[in-house]
Structure formats: C-alpha cells, structure tokens
Image (cartoon, rainbow, N blue to C red; front, side, top):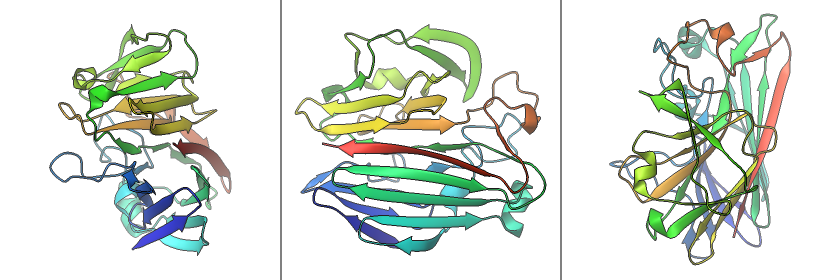
Amino acid sequence: MVYNLNSDKLTVSINSKGAEIASVKRECMEYIWQAKADVWPRHAPVLFPIVGKLKNGSLSQHGFARDKEFVCLSQSKTDISFSLKSDQETKKLFPFDFELIIKYTLSSDTITCSYEVNNPSSQNLLFSIGAHPGFATPDQLSNYILKFKADKEYNITLLADGLLTETKTKLPLQNGELNLNTSLFDKDALVFENSQIDSISLISRSGNGVELNCVGWPYFGIWSKKGSDEFVCLEPWHGITDSINSTGDLSQKKGIIKLEGVGKFECAFNMRFF
C-alpha cells in the first residue's frame, strides 16, 4: 500500500513494502529514482538487519527488511510510522527477536527519517541498519556535483566483490566538490569509514538538488549501478559490509551494534530538497 505525506513544498509517497520512500515531488520535479526494473528496481530501501554483505552469504545483501510488508502504526498529513517485527520466517534467517520502527516526518522542504530498533528479548540483539536512498539524475550524472560539507581530505575504502579490503584511496575533490561521472562506480560503491561524512549535497547544474544530513553516522556509501547515469545513492550507515578477512562471527563483525536485552537503539537523518 502507498501512503502520502504533504507539505507546502513537497508531496511524498511511501510504500508499506519495505517502508520505502517511493517518490518526493516538488511541483513537477521528481527527486527519487523511479526503480526501473532493468536498471535498479528499488527507490530508497532500508538496510536491516545487515548493511552490505556477509562473507558467508547466510543473509542476502542488505538484509530482508526491504522486502517485507510493514504495518502502518500511525499517520497524519505530515508524518507516518511503520513497524516490522520478528516472526518465524525472519528467525529462519536471523535468529533474534526485534521490532524495527521507521518514522518519516515532513516539514516544508525537509524529510526526517527516524529508525528505532527494539530488543524485546532478554538475549542480546546483533544488527546493523542503514539507508539507501536513490536520487534521480535526469540531466545525466555528469551534470551533477556532490558538495561536501568540509573541504578536506576524504579517504575511500576499496571493495572487492562487495567486501572491504585494506586498501584506501583519496577522494579527488576540487574546492570540496566532486564532479560525478559513471566511471566513479566502475569498482562498486565509494565507502567512507570513521564518521567522515555528516552532510553532503547532490546538486544539478541548474541548482536543484538534495542536502542529506547524518550527524553521528559512522559509515557512508555513495553508489550508482555501473554504467548508469540515471541516479545516484547517498547512504548513511550504522554498520558496514564484511571485510575480506571476516571470520563470520557476527559478534565480532565490524560496525555491528550490540543491543542488550529489552534495550532500544535510535538514529535519524534528514533530507532537504531544493
């Protein structure tokens, strides 16, 4: 089912499957990637209970929440909340009790996305969570820039078959800006560790775009499908893909969150559209 939020600036559509934002419109302008099946068939999936891959492949990439039907808990004109709870099916893949609550709040030109993970059990809950919003680039990727909050040195951790390597490289910025092109993603996503990014903007040559703010998120990814110039994803993460040296022990996984019995984890980020 699709639910709508409205403000004086934006109309937002959210699908109960995956509790995924499916559209953000300002007048006739669509900001969200429209999930072409032959390119990338998603809009803005929520990544849970893992981000990226597990080396042993015991869970599908980015977890199962993005493919689950969520229950709508409440809705008004400007906010909506969804819930996903563990059940017999999820426990076959992920042997933990949990409730994931996702809330979207719309205020004029800004959407705040809030995640709450509850552990209803006396046992520890091990998980990661992340966002994966895809933004349409209808004027072709090369007509867009990424503007970073600070003009400083940013380090990218390189991937091999979706897993972290020990190799890092510098991001080639000019005055805090990165000109986008399809070759940037020839070797998969650009992955940033160690809380390097807390604000980033995607801006078209015409001046439209989105500013994403994610203070306190330790990891960040920038991705587009290899060869595509139709969209780019800006992804704040609490958690990260396995490394090539991962042992498979979830409790030792890099970036894993350990939530003790009857505990709660909360995080949020926002997107301002202009």
